[in-house]
Image 1 (tube, helix red, strand yellow):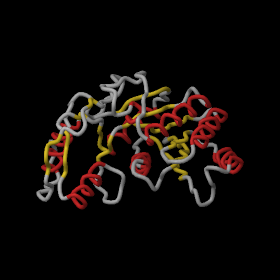
Image 2 (cartoon, one colour):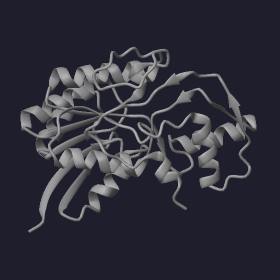
Image 3 (cartoon, rainbow, N blue to C red):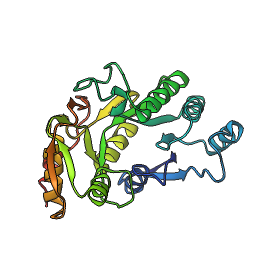
Length: 257
């Protein structure tokens, strides 16, 4: 008999959450019932409404992929603990900043140097303070192919549209994964009941520089219009290491046509 689990998911209109939702719905062995968070109905800042909705939904997992106040992340994590439910929060390699050099382990010191990294650090702390059994997955750039989304290909297209060229550092080794691979890794962790901090990075062992990555993406997508030039603007090894996580390498993915 196929089991069924209710998943409460935030950020469904974002970049990664829709991909995660798709793979949850396509899971061959478990029937996942998805409940997307509707901000029009329940504001993340209305703590009473948030609590009532979560307690009424009684999800098996809360997957918090949406952006919002740190207090919302902390409250959701705490409610998951009260329900004895799983809690997943997606963080970012940016918590390590762009001045420190990696590769980074899950326990490496965090020194975020810009707003997004600082925000995610505060969320991580709020989540773990409210629920030490939470699952936090740190990610790098996500490779997706939908125009308008917050993904690497869209960022490169915008560079071409605005500047007419893509300057790619030959001294920056970014953390990066395909959206599908990130989503599938998170589902595996959820099913395993994983807790704590994990890193998902398809470039962890490939160690492609940003210049190599963009050049490979240009070939992979047949984007002859992309004008790629080498730069030294950023010098950092940003890779996220975690021997517990197995995801397809970015080189193997980009070799498929």
